[in-house]
Length: 315
Length: 180
Image (cartoon, rainbow over all chains, first blue to last red; front, side, top):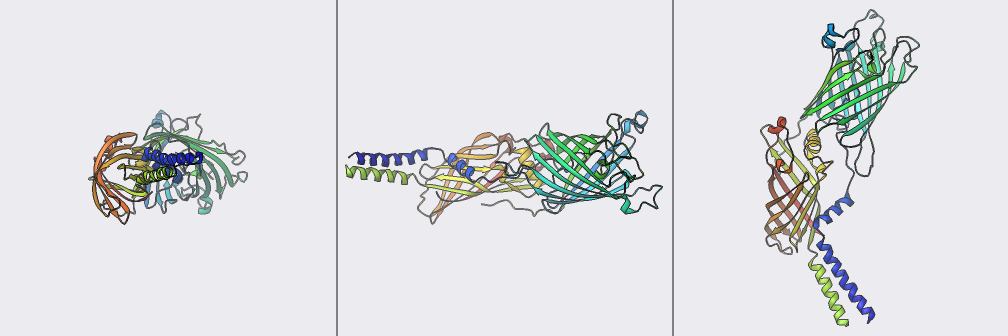
């Protein structure tokens, strides 16, 4: 009798349980199912552009898209070529025009030409790891950059300075994390090789550590800063200053516009990081002495490989 | 007593089967389409979750905004970061009921009216739309098309790109449910 009662209760309670399960909202069922099937998703928009200011970011160009990059720096604000006589640098200008193309969604190639020492540059860039959200499956995005630059400006040593002597290379591993929607930080261990150094005492192989980040101040505006620390004892023949830059970025549709201040005049990483080019002045000045270059970066995306026009979905 | 127990168990099982008219899908298709002078924008989401309770005539949808795939990566980034703010409001959900008689064990196309709350970009609004449920060999497929206005959901479109995005978006839903 007792056992039967228990069976009755169990039967009743299972029936009731099922009734209760029905009473809980359908949405809860869906959300539970979504939760258990959740896959980590890639974090997007760690940076808005492919440059923090002068340093490359982990971002690459999407497949089939051509990016046109204009990097413009006026002359130094004060210092020997600045001041009131030079309208605080606005009389002079340095310009780099660059094209960057996304071969795949992770692989970008770029070329550029800078008026600073009439420099040509090119690079290959590959996004190895992508940060994912959720349970921190992948905490960072990692991108590698292989870069080459050669300057063509005539000097008194022209007969001696062949193309190889004018060429320098760099390899960078960019490691970035988007901590929140408003904060992204990046580390950039950098290796540079100069085929020719100013004196034999200077190192051909130079190591530096770059760091930078972005803080969003509104939906479409952000403040960026970057610093490149050159390890001591590598460039000894001339005083070196670490490159320090900051910018104010504004995004509008397909454009990213950025106002920048930097102590580097050059926009080529082998020039502004190492500051050592044979026979010419260093490219990075001292913030304290007013060797500050005002300028802007402007980037514009063009869809070269137009995706096929898609008809609206029909019932 | 024995008979009573059996009866109770039977009732309990009948009660539970009567309430088991649940149909679910984890890969419903949701598309939205914006037709504007400058460009047409369309995005597909093939990972929407939906469930129908045939007994209570309830229906629910839930989807991740990040799962919308656009033709251009840049559009997708702007959609997630600037418009729907997927990091803050990752989901769009709908929960409601339908009117109209649907016999789930009989093949046929049934017209229904769905009414309920749509929550998008942290704004909840009541929407009502016609839809069809097609029953074939025990399989249920749902189809619907309706329009929504981004501004109703507090999605602001800057003046610079106002001509690129339609005031009203057409949403198309196709869901193939299986018994749950």
